[in-house]
Image (tube, rainbow, N blue to C red; front, side):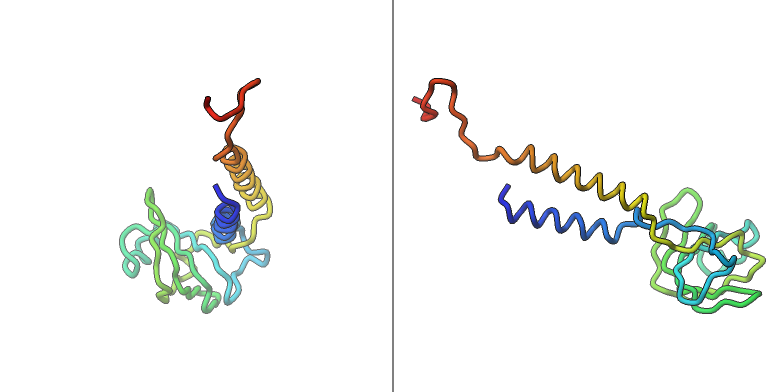
Length: 152
């Protein structure tokens, strides 16, 4: 593999890693309330799943999105994903959804996770090192002991 291809592969890996969900976790907000503009996951109660399901489709367990408005009685989100039991998260395009407080089991705030990010960097770095080591001998002609290496 040429140097420019190795460099390109490394840069693409780093770019993919930077946007990776592995770099984030969802933790309870420090003040027990989400702040406008924060990206959160709102986990629903069973009754909340029924109530919110009328607006987002059957059996939602979680909504992910940016907080547009917060009050004592509700959170208004720009929804980017809907989680459903035993299914992958379903992407949404920022639709506005209001969730009343009684429907919320708990809220997690998106935060950068240094440990998970560090582990991901080590894994990608190790994979790149192995790929370079294995691919580094490509195109090399080896000479047998006492031979000329010309095949004659």
